[in-house]
Length: 280
Image (cartoon, rainbow, N blue to C red; front, side, top):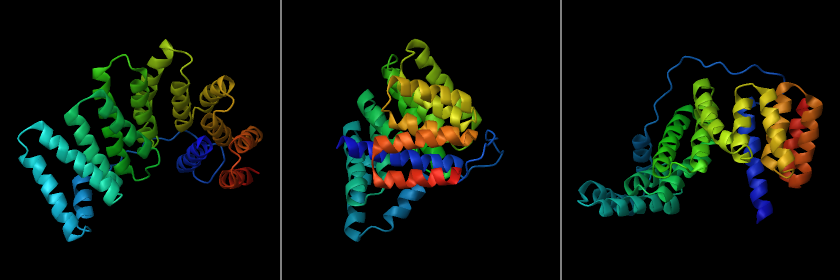
């Protein structure tokens, strides 16, 4: 099970980094934000579209649950309806966005640290591989709001601060929004100033440097993590890609090979070999 988790995590790393850098390895300057209107993501339109594909029985069931939200005269009734809708979209249809939306609404209504954090991490995990800019913007905004609500309930929770910083960096920051990246970095720096050995914060700070083109700073962060934990696959994979982006092919290949040895999975090795081939 542990090996499967590691492999899955590494596959996500490869996909997300290919989205950041594309299929190139030359030294690239930091992204410059382009002043353009981002299409607004209309989650209700998405849900209505998904509902139009349901069977008549499913549509009737959904309608009853939605009435429970609009007509529910006590929060407990509304909360029950939100949770039932979330379960339906997750289990019966396997549609993430409606599932996430109702999970978010339930968490906001319940307003407990546990449920707010669960919903926030659900969005954060998903937005890391979201490539539609409008959807990414919506998911980032939701994740940040949920983490911030949870943080108000527990202001000393450093993991929640890392969550906020991560949402900025992996979300709008990854899409080229330098201001969002900086907001995330500042949130993460507040954590490492208190705990210099918080490797989760250092990792996302490294990603922030990678995204913004500050490769030397990113490399410094990733190396620090690898020295602390030589088996940290995520840090090693990011380190390899940072060297590749910087143009240091020898170091990139070295760390790609280290990641292959640690993961020891044919599918992952094949993807990494492709990256190495592009470098040579």
